[in-house]
Image 1 (cartoon, rainbow, N blue to C red):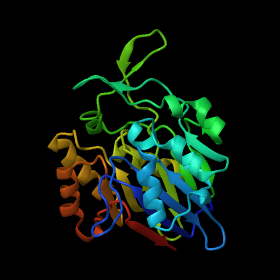
Image 2: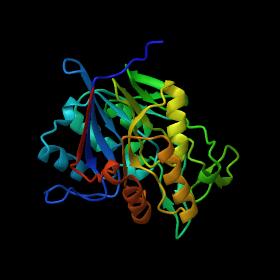
Image 3: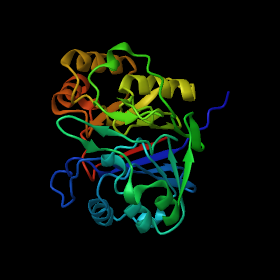
Image 4: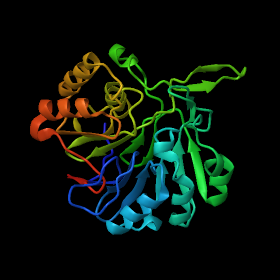
Amino acid sequence: MIKISVDNVKIISLINNSPKYDSYLKGCFGVSFWIEAGSDNNKKIILFDVGPLVEPLVYNAKLLGLNLSDIDMIVLSHCHFDHTEALHGVIKEIGHKVPIYAHPDIFRPNFILEPEYMNYAMKDENSKGNIEKLGGNFIFSKTPIEIYPGVHVTGEVNKVTAFEETGGVSCFTIDGEGRTITDRLQDDLSLVINVTGKGLVIITGCGHAGIVNIIKHSIKVTNINRIEGIIGGFHLLEAKQDRVDKTVESIKQFSPHWVAPTHCTGIIPTAKFAFAFGDKFKEINAGDIVEINR
């Protein structure tokens, strides 16, 4: 069986909690990755999440020499504001019609109640109708979809790892009968890129589905079990240390060449990854770049 792959991947952290050391970039609580994938003669530019504010994304892109009008497609990992709020402004900056890959439930109500009510949903200027009016073309899928040869959006992730069922964010939604119920964040998607001769590069937003689940699901989707690297939020900042330790040990079993936990992973969990993986650990802030070539 021939497995389709890309020759080169460049990942640029446009938005992350903190800026790169000794830079004039802006940090911002959220995630946005500029991803170039393909070959030297044929590549696509994918914006994975857009962060919560337009201004720092545009500022960082300009300082990094990136032209937002070059973006070919957008992937939204899930509905939360720190990954989606800047969408309307970003599409205006792109200035042309652009496909947006997302889960079909991304526009559902989503909110937290503790310590007080806060709306996490896509709303107002980020409503479906307004984004489409601005030039966004939504492509919804619960199942895996190949958006470019060798590049997959995972679709809904199967939750099969028992210890990952604890310590997640406590979000709620409204069901079809108007009841407030726990939101299991089924819209949490990741991006998986198969790099020639290297294996899978897995890019997450928050990793609400569980980072171990996401890795297992990515292997199942692609039928490739060689992991080059994992970058993005691992969402362990609310997890107890038992879950953190099990997560670190589980990921070591996949033997990735590098790991780069960011954003919502948490300080102590990130430190544990750094100690456990040594020189295979990458610290990623806004402005940092990861390049993988065949």
